[in-house]
Length: 111
Image (cartoon, rainbow, N blue to C red):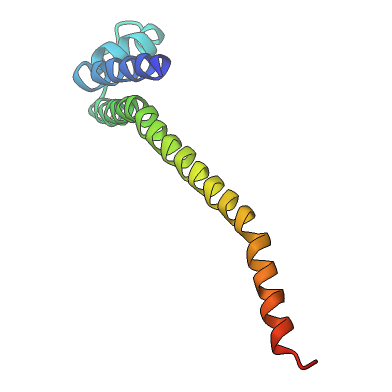
């Protein structure tokens, strides 16, 4: 769970940098390829910002999902335990019910 929180925080940080400072992302990823380039285009800035939002959303999901899955897992364990208790009760009552049924049918059948 700690790893998911750290990964989520890292993704949120990367997404925030991409959203608020797309020029930095351009310098790191594309700036070294040009000599005296003019900088990122408006389209590059827009696409980088959309990617930053997606990264931040992924980071939030990565942080929240383990808590949700933990509660779902706990619910599944409780329901399995309840089913086990029901089946145990049925196994205990099954021989009694069978003998009652046979006794009832014995008296119903003509002799």
